[in-house]
Image (cartoon, rainbow, N blue to C red; front, side, top):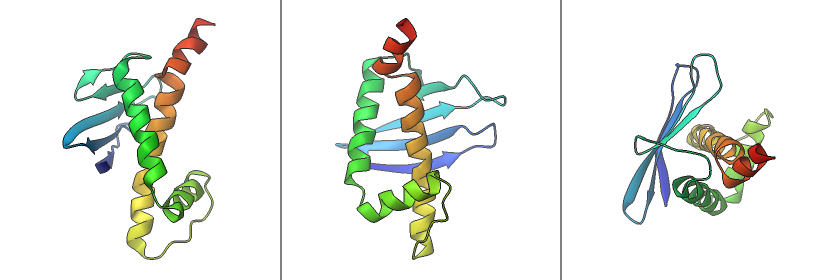
Length: 124
């Protein structure tokens, strides 16, 4: 499994990336409107709803991807996300870690707002 073509846009912070698994690629887009919330999640240009199967699969794949990253890279991503000064060599590793923070941000947002957990919280 790999994640590539990670981009962030100046439209308010929309994030896109491609997740490839078993020869199949999925385009993930978390749209951020100019004024922030709410964010729209699209997978392969299809609008996702809370708790749908595609969201569950995306979260599982992102968890698997995260677990497969080397410990040093996960620590570097954690440092960046916690706004601590990261120490990395070489520079390419730091650039990758910055890109990976975007994927982690999408994971965290989808988990909080699109997962079955979010659906059950909304019902309470």
